[in-house]
Amino acid sequence: ELPLQAALAFAAANRASDAEAMLREALRRAPGHPRARYNLGLLLARGGRLAEARDELARAEAADLSSAALPYALATVLW
Image 1: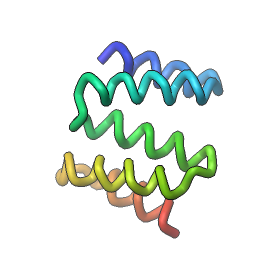
Image 2: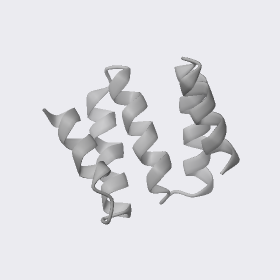
Image 3: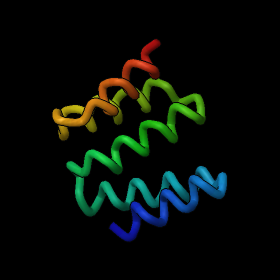
């Protein structure tokens, strides 16, 4: 959880590259972590990296089918 919390703090401080590094570290430690994938997808979308964002959000949705936020986020990137 520490890399994810650090990533969220970096994102809030507009430090996108640091946030991305911490999200990728969180996913290295727990590859199926839907919240880390979701946040990485949002970060990538915000940076205009839509194909990568779509892939991460689709992985997040597959990892947590119970969350309504995940398909919504994916749909906004695809729109």
